[in-house]
Image (tube, rainbow, N blue to C red; front, side, top):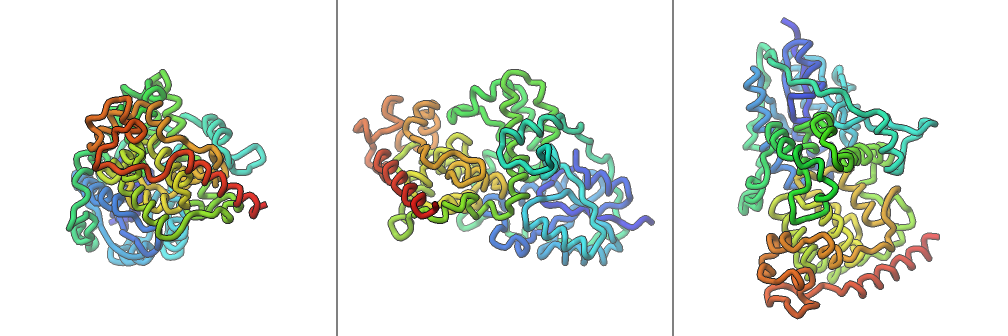
Length: 461
């Protein structure tokens, strides 16, 4: 019988439009493998919210595999060591995978390739990261020209259907039990709201896309309104590879209206990967060296302010609503993410990396590239970013984007306030006793941030 091949899964937990599965299935028996490797990423091991999602996604992938005659083999440890052990047990020598571009996964691929015949495919992005370059062959650092160049390569190839059947090996390798990995929170179970919000897995991803297709044409009009369902909410499904960006593109591209704005957001994922290929430390290091001189606040007062921000107790309703939505559901509306991030960095003058770390642990779509690029854009520290001195006014943003219903949903202390007062209850003399006073005034915060920026410029030049 033909020797089996291993399909090494990471953030590509699907059967359709999955080139590694297609290639392995064409070659013979297939052994799908997921390895929980916390050693290779070290401090970039998955956060708690992502682990919740991973548990359910792996469970549903195993069910889908069993319908096709296969099963999912689970192991824990370093990827190269575990894959080598499985290969020896099963008599396999070839491993198929989709490429991943986070620095630790690139290291892991090199380690696996030293032990086994590793065949890598692309398929988690619209174009392979690093492939979209300038006329001189240099990678892009700025999003707009990158997007224009990416568009010249679009549309992506048509999605490939899932294999109808996966041949099984003579003997299945030993597998861990998913429950033994303890990916789900207990004592307390802080993720009770997650299950109401999300259905992890490939079927859930396509159901989410089905629900969004009819709304895609009005994306630009509604995406900035937290009180409406204008977002696609596909980000965690994309992050875990439960659906390919090519599948999303071909389902939505002809929707008309402002769907191009949505497609450009899908392209932002490609841009973020393009950045971490150039700057592997982007998730934890400011791209602009001058910001090494920024006098970020530290000490007990800053720690207390950080905790208030994390808990949604800043006295700014739009910020608090976003942070509470994040804790309850593992996700936050994109416009509110910008407002909340800007508030931490500029109003509280706390290093953007503290916010990035919090999002890494609490977002179900916590993505190294997206998270780092977005935080550095807001903080003004990135290669392509908003200027630090452009300080977002959260109270104005809240009213401009009609966030009243969103605030009532997530900050129930304010549920009875009228539209005129809910965005800034303190200024209207309507702050309920149980809701905190503003942690700092907007003008005071702006002045402090600009003064800190002047200090940075004086030392950084």
